[in-house]
Amino acid sequence: MIRSIGIVGSGLAGLSTAKTLRQFGFDVTIFEKEADIGGVWSASRRYPGLTTQNPRDTYAFSDFPMPRSYPEWPTGAQVQAYLETYVDHFAFRDAIRLNCEVVAAIPRGEEGWTIVTRSTRDGNEDRHDVDYLIVCNGIFSIPSIPAFPGRDDFIGAGGHILHTSEFTDPEIARGRNLLVIGYGKSSCDVAMASVGLAASTTVIARHLIWKIPKRLAKILNFKHLFLNRLGEGLFRYIQIRGFEKFLHGPGKPVRDMMMGSVQAVISRQLQLRRIGLEPDSKLETIARSTVSLVTDGFYENIASGAIGFQKGEIATLRPGEATLSTGATVPAEVIICGTGWHQRCDFLDAATLAKVTDMRGNFRLYRSMLPVGVPRLAFNGYNSSFFSQLNAEVSALWLADLLRGGLTPPPVETQNAYVDSRLAWMEARTDGKHSKGTNIIPFSVHHMDEILAEMDLKLPLSTRLKHWFVAIDAADYAGLLPRLMRRHGVTSRPQHRASQGQAA
Ligand SMILES: Cc1cc2nc3c(=O)[nH]c(=O)nc-3n(C[C@H](O)[C@H](O)[C@H](O)COP(=O)(O)OP(=O)(O)OC[C@H]3O[C@@H](n4cnc5c(N)ncnc54)[C@H](O)[C@@H]3O)c2cc1C
Ligand SMILES: NC(=O)c1ccc[n+]([C@@H]2O[C@H](COP(=O)([O-])OP(=O)(O)OC[C@H]3O[C@@H](n4cnc5c(N)ncnc54)[C@H](OP(=O)(O)O)[C@@H]3O)[C@@H](O)[C@H]2O)c1
Image (cartoon, rainbow, N blue to C red):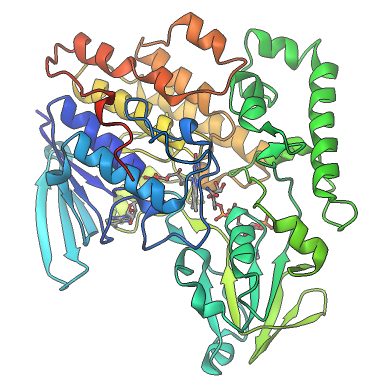
């Protein structure tokens, strides 16, 4: 009998999992190592200027809209405040243990897990027995910083090396020569945040990639083009059905023309050729483990010279300067690495990890949630997405259905075949950049469709048709939870939208 559930992490995956499972009658506890909730959006991790990439209504939970007073792209602090209000609205603050790091999870077979936690305040350790463990520790949560040759001398002479998620106080950049490593969204945002503060800012990037402006041709919100079924359908999924067969078959010339025109608009709008930053590849290569939007003002500042740009990587560091792989030398006192993240679960024991991941560290999760053949363990948030909150929410419904006995996963051989084929497909289409097998971007809606189909819980046909042409509003998914609750005979009514707009 499964009753108590331990959840690692209070990002939006942990929060939506806890809220949903509590609504289904489970006794949930979230363990969070930081002093506040929100993960990516926590004050402990957000750099100055961070906003969502998703427009507001595409990043809210289905049954709890963001306040109308929020801008189209809410700030990190606003998202964190929204999540605080979500916790209060659904009344599960008592389930959250802050400053509580999970340092070990000891399997007890079919009995569940013993979770060992350490207080980040006083170091005290505690043990908690739970019937089921759900890992929501975030796939973009553990910073990855390259081991630069010469690092120790550089730091010894007063230099600083930090990750973008550690750039929470911009003062470290003031009056100093700043290098920002990487060309993902984090790097471009941090470079922008340092303009006018640092003595100099130089971005160092190994590869050029395409980025989407928030508004194409400065007018059309990108959500109307990419955050719907048609936008997803432009990229070739592992299996194609219906209209997608046309788009990637007889209609391919039309689809290629659409992609080509969007690429031309982006290149012109950002003047990429003039500033020498047009990628060699086509726009469709944009969808790897991440998709990056343009940071407001970034290219204008490159064009004006306020932000320098060097192609290559750091070869060696010396006090006050870096030599690049191109042989160029640049002044450097602070190095901020937007060099991505590790996907790891250091608190799991080696025997469990050997089943959860393959030899290359790729996560082997059925439906991005269930490790094959490991009892009483699941993951949520292991699905890099453009609708991370909706994917987490729909995944939480799947987990509730599973734990209430409504859903039987297929046999182990089928789960393994699913994982094998997905990993091979991701590897091929992302050139290895699939965040250890956690990539579903840009196929967030396909992923949710499959999860819902397995639960026999589809969105109405009219909504699915609408989603071909208009940006997906998270609220369109709000009916699913009450339907699943009714099916399981759960009587407590989920709360509704009365307290929208509370997060200030
Ligand atoms: C800067 C940034 C901006 C993003 N913007 C968007 C966006 O606009 N749209 C979008 O769809 N996606 C975006 N993403 C992707 C993002 O990862 C998700 O949207 C989402 O916020 C992730 O939620 P999560 O709960 O899975 O992980 P996280 O938010 O990373 O939360 C994981 C939590 O687990 C905690 N934790 C980890 N290990 C332990 C442990 N051992 N013990 C206790 N607690 C632990 C962490 O402290 C953290 O609070 C963004 C990612 C980043 C890095
Ligand atoms: N809401 C927002 O505004 C926002 C802000 C930040 C991030 N995000 C999201 O968060 C996720 C992660 O984004 P991110 O920008 O943090 O990371 P990312 O997209 O993984 O980008 C990492 C960058 O670091 C480079 N890199 C990696 N290892 C390197 C090394 N050893 N040396 C030099 N360069 C290295 C990569 O270059 P290569 O291409 O050469 O590998 C890449 O340019 C994405 O989904 C992103 O969309 C969203």
